[in-house]
Length: 134
Image (cartoon, rainbow, N blue to C red; front, side, top):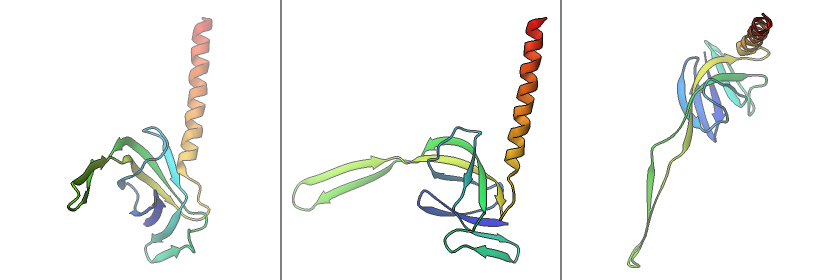
């Protein structure tokens, strides 16, 4: 199974467990992000292509790290004018791992994980409160 997503003005062909660097996304390492602009989803011979996007399809990913790309240098020069300008640019990047590709109407697995984590946090808080009372 693979999908084509659009983020940061670029298109990427992704499959589960792919790691890729995209334009900077908001979030911290360990957070989950969802790419809503899914242009195509393919599973075996079943291919769905959207008119601009595939309705109801999302791709979820986990942020691995926030960083910066390599420095790209540029030089501007005008001949016979003794005019030269040198500059550089480093793009902010986010490294993500694709966790799952969701077709129409399928619920993400991450939502159930977060609810379970909240339940565990509540139990932990109750245990700490009980320990303080003793």
